[in-house]
Amino acid sequence: MGSECETGVYIHSKYDKKTLQYDAAVICVPWKGWMLGLGSFIIDDCHVEDELKIWGFPEAADEEFKPDTELELAGKCHIDGIVNNSVGNQFSISYHKEVLGRNADRDNVMVGFSGGGIFTEREEGIIYTGIISKPYGDKMSGNMMWAIPGQVVLELIKEVGLEFSLPDTFEIYKNRIAGQFPAFRNSAKRFFIDRVEELIDDNGLKPCVVIRKNLYFEKLKCMGDRRQCVDFWEGQLKKAVLLSLRNVDVAQMANPFVEMGNSGEEESVAMVYVCTEERVFDVLGSLMRKDYFS
Image (tube, rainbow, N blue to C red):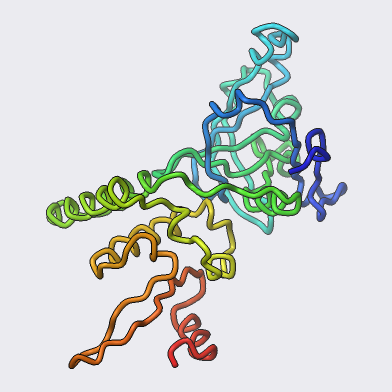
């Protein structure tokens, strides 16, 4: 983003002050070199019964805050929660207040946690799943709050014009796929790992290579952001291994052709990777209507 975003606060275009629907904002700050050392996380929606960690600065810990000192973040802590339900663009969370002390209630919890980040942990790593918004129901509801899902955050990021970078390597996806092999397929697992390592180390296989100048990448139907999508990159790595077995060079994997046919009448056929959340027969019907099988 340009300099106009460096101190900008961007509120979701559908934000409603009365209902707090789409209660999300992005704050843009100037880039500093030390930020290169920050860890990364994936943005995604949470699921019912996901166990969460909710970070904030509870009112009870205000005294620990000492500006301009090493104790600036001393009041930061988390509460544990679990997802109860998902309704529209919000989801409800039950949390455990005992970690905040005997006198903690919904009101002073929300003072310090409203706007805080919600995280869960999955096989692919730390997942940022949304933002705390407001208390749930009346006080008789107990320790409950509403939250805004990660998908709304992604929408806002796109509104602002920020873009996610591509992954740097296929290593994390290699390990995830290898973990999906059953124990009795150890030889196939070993073959897959060796093949991927050969493609990465000897042939320069990277995520940017498999979508280079590929118009299909930008046109794929997707509810999320495929630059962050674990399923998408796992599929791309599986495709790369299969293409390598057909002697397709890494340099051609973005727009691959394979030789197909029989009786000596082989023909070069373009291959397209289809990634979609639609049903299989809808995908095939769409391709047929567009003469992809002609």
